[in-house]
Amino acid sequence: MAKDVDLSSREWTEIIFEGKNKEFGAYQLRNDSVRRHNMAMISVVVVIIVALLLSLLVGRIEQAEETVIASNEQVMASVDTAQDEPEDEPEDEPERFEEPEVEEVLPEEVLNTVKVTELAIVEDDQVNKEDEIKTQDELKETANAFGQTDFNEGTDDVTVVREIKDEVVVEEKKPAPAPEQIFNAVEESPKFPGGDKAMYEFLSRNIRYPEMAAQNNIQGRVTVQFVVEKDGSIGEVKVVRGKDPDLDKEAVRVVKSMPKFIPGKMNGQAVRVWYTLPINFKLQS
Image 1 (cartoon, helix red, strand yellow):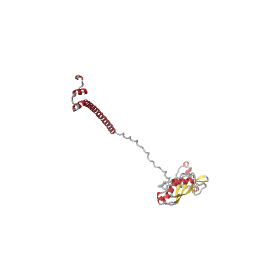
Image 2: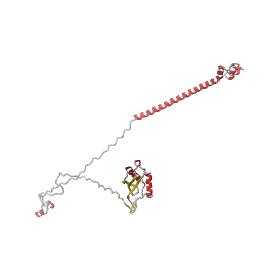
Image 3: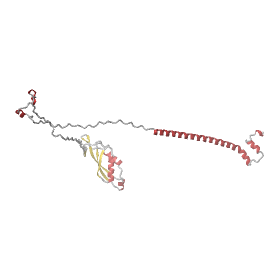
Image 4: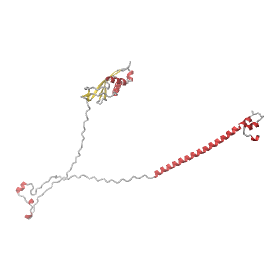
């Protein structure tokens, strides 16, 4: 029966320690040997598998590095090849033949010509009636006497100096258009959208009391005058009666932020109008 028992089984351990003190350490070592052997085998297998995986991973990494190096070498080679290629020489532009400047030839002044009447002896049939010697009476009637000179139109001065005067064109400056008139009083005064009540509500909502003026308990009225343009927008703004620099500055700011008015009109046409507005600054008690 002992031949059929597995030497690594618990039954074999019980047979060996039958009738002996099982509290002794050898029994425990023998009893746990199977588990230790199995753990050792599993550890060996795991180590082998990890070693194989590491070797495969290292091989893959080396292969990837070789591929990257090869690609970098190809890129560098292509760059070097591109640098070695001679640049295309720019084609020679065809020579431009400029026409020689031709100086303007001004017509020469015509010199006076001299016509001299000479006496020649010829046969009667060869006498030209036009060149016939004139009588004394005929000579008196004409200025072309013998030995007299005839002058054509022109000048006697051979060294005539021509003066070419450059005309300077001065553009006439147009006067600037006069600014449109700003009326002080019109038939229809400008109006804030919604009326005066809406205007003062706007001012009370948007005025920011200057901190320095509030600390110094500065209160009072600032009178502002501004132009309502033809489209109702706010134009020039000025303080006609101030109270304090900070209050004056705030009054101007809030007036410039006002929406478009309904413009004033004269003869049914929108015009520019001065608008006077008093603004009261009062601290809450």
